[in-house]
Amino acid sequence: MKRLPTVSKAKEEIEFLQDYVFLAETYQPGSLQEQIIQLYAFTGSIQKVTDQLNAERAQEKLLPIDAKVVTEVIQSRPMDPLHKLVRTNYLNKTRPARQLSKMYAKW
Image (cartoon, rainbow, N blue to C red):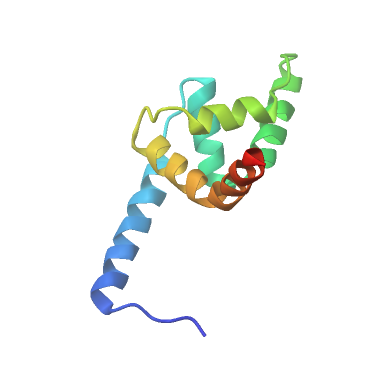
């Protein structure tokens, strides 16, 4: 069973999530990097972002995007508030895998 937070903490979390949703929905991507940030905010998956971008780019007969490019954009220095939130989420999500790779690199 999930432990319930206090009412004040729950209100803070609701407010934070509402701000995040507002940022993601009102985001106006002007570049490929901004489009990657917005798509990742909606999907939460590098592979889904790559697939969607490549499908759009194939219609325009542009070169495909590699997942490594998407990862580098997300990990790059944040350029706006949505990118900052997306980057923080991505780094927290991938922390266990990154720590394991560091541990095996020492061997």
